[in-house]
Length: 146
Image (cartoon, rainbow, N blue to C red; front, top):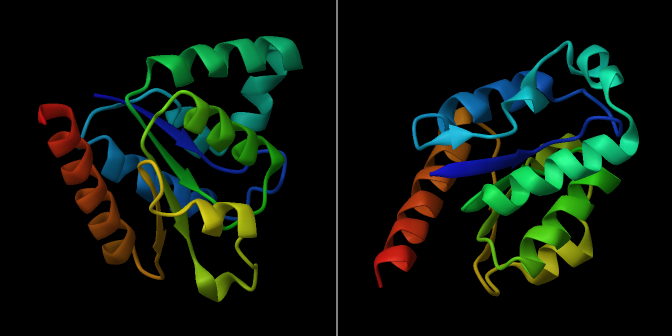
């Protein structure tokens, strides 16, 4: 299974350690096309591409993915764009959000929950997001076989 992971890049890298944990978990279920989002040196490596090249590359990966998992605690225009595109491509989406962060989850994200294979997992600990991912993967597996 190809997995597209979204996390804030230019909007703020405060949650990089969490991204790394999520990507590690996701890799037990399939190939994470965007595991570079969890790389600490990402901003340096991304300088080799211009913005249009990044968009084209990421949209190709998104079209190849069967599912999308987005960490949405750190507000990010790019992550919102990726989620919207995933919805138009009818990809199942799981958004992971940490309520203790002090951020408020977007009403557009919250309003889309449980509609057309779109889910939100509020978590605080690694065990919580791992359980949401496990349940989401189970849902996606059932959906493919039905």
